Image 1: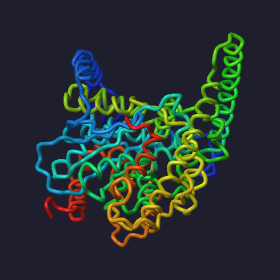
Image 2: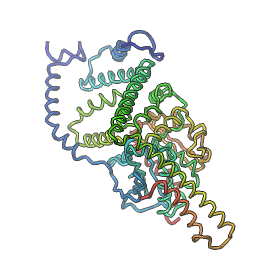
Image 3: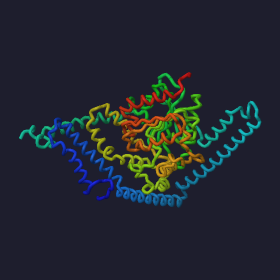
Image 4: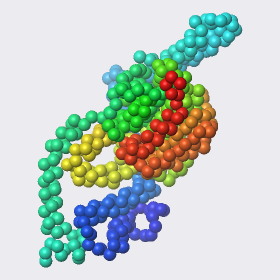
Length: 162
Length: 369
């Protein structure tokens, strides 16, 4: 597979470049016999892995890969969407609810929840304003904690604290 | 030619002795397999005991239980990302961020967001930050009798913590961010390229799938470092199969890495679109519900911890936070580790977390103070 990467320097295909990099790491050693063969082989492996990882990174950032990824994802999503539509049709033909139906119900519930919360918030504000106006030492609903609880209740109402 | 004369000519050519050693090693490793399987079966995650003190929908608020005496009144709440589970912060003894703070005498809590199902696909940023996180914080405040708490946010949880602190500065005493992205202006690293709007249509993904699928997220994260995650890791495993300690750590880590959860669709869409693609958080343009998230409203002490070799959240994504906030007390530490190593790495546990504990201790109210 060929691709162009603006960040890669020099020509040649990436596979050859990766090998050249790897071998290049040993060139300065003059191929001297390693004192510890296990350690030497570990170092060689690490050098190979590092070169491989670097080239993978370059490839995964390349335009060719990004373009391929986009096309693959678009294709997968289009297929999944068709599948969803097909399943919805099958379920509806059989008088069964599909995901789109539960989505609609969820959205209605969320919108109801928001409206209720908005009302509670407005009521809380009005109650606070009344308390302030009354200027009583012990405000309606036993002090600030009552209003705070109402506020917290408004928030919790949305989350249905259990 | 004898075996000893080989290396001088061909240093990497295996000698017959090497070949024999290789086969002997392989035999040993195969013989070790049942032991490795046994370790995999019995390995447990989580170093500190917890109790669930509150539930909101699927969220659980966990409190860490410890015999260590309490030294500070200001409680600490950990906020983890919505991707993966939060027990990475308390993976195993010796690899636990939580235990540092607990043993230091902090009353410590963790927000476990739970696993979203299809019915949670419409949960958005407002639900997570203004509803769930705010309620969890209120519960901790109420329980400890403190007006303000400290927050430690990790990764995406750090971004959410920053948003929360900006919206409720009156409830946060100290903010610690751990590899938390806030500025997505630089597009030169892999994840930024993959999530760019020209490549990744997040609207379509969420429209089709509902929630962001766990498999897609895990696959993407693995492919960010394919050689390390799919090849080198198994070489290391093979080489260390005889080391029980290594196996325990390895399987604990694997348990966490493979314990993936989906992300609620609308939340994922908003985070990717508004934060990662449009970079609204650092630019002061992000709105949660009707409220504008203004990072300048953060005036509490801030500790920003970044990992120098982080491939997910490079330091350049986190460090601009310190200039964006209104705090005077700002500290940042760029530690030589990776994204996960910052939490579970031996060196981070030895050097970084004691420092972070000290930082927090100096800025928390002592017990009875």
